Length: 127
Image (cartoon, rainbow, N blue to C red):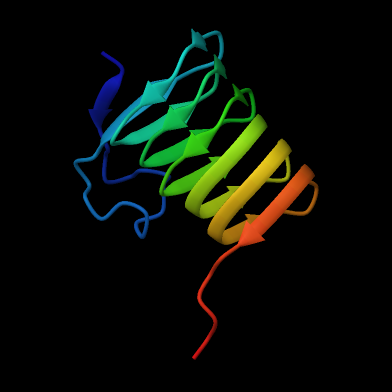
């Protein structure tokens, strides 16, 4: 119902999308979810969710709010998150407001992002 194939002009970096036919769910502001969400595709979320998300790629837009825990390969937060993130790549934009714990291999925090909690980057040491 909310899924469609990713177009070649996707705004998600090609390194994150090895398979261009990966499903993309777009949930705009005004959507309210109470409960957990699971997806093997890309989820662009602009609403409010109270629950845990397990997805491949998560993008929380500037109007999005997540009250729960996130497990994903790649996470981009532009909005609000109150909970934990366990991922490979995490990017917090300048508009992000995060309260919780982030554990990832790589964490990028843009100037202006508001973070209260603990960040743990578990990337491999250079050889």
